[in-house]
Length: 144
Image (cartoon, rainbow, N blue to C red):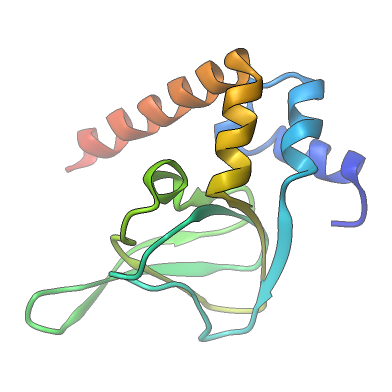
């Protein structure tokens, strides 16, 4: 994204950040790094350690889960304003699925260290994001 204001405007449409005020959005925007992936590139790989989250700004990506028998299942598709990797953002654990770019895809990446630093510096921001993550978990569990 070209500048902070453009990024802040974009982030207001990302469900994870909708409860944040302009100051908090600017804080987060300053920590993101833009990454671009070509069709077929693995944005994240199932089983590998994860140290941050991604938010798509343009393009499309598929979530692919490898089964115990080696077969693969597409379990979701992401487009602009979708985010993933939020669990790794919190704990740095292994990725539960692979995310593969289906076309040229641009993502904003927020690393674990940067995120934890933000959480420590702003309790309100931490609370808003924790609530958004809990809501997402409830929706996910409701679809199983």
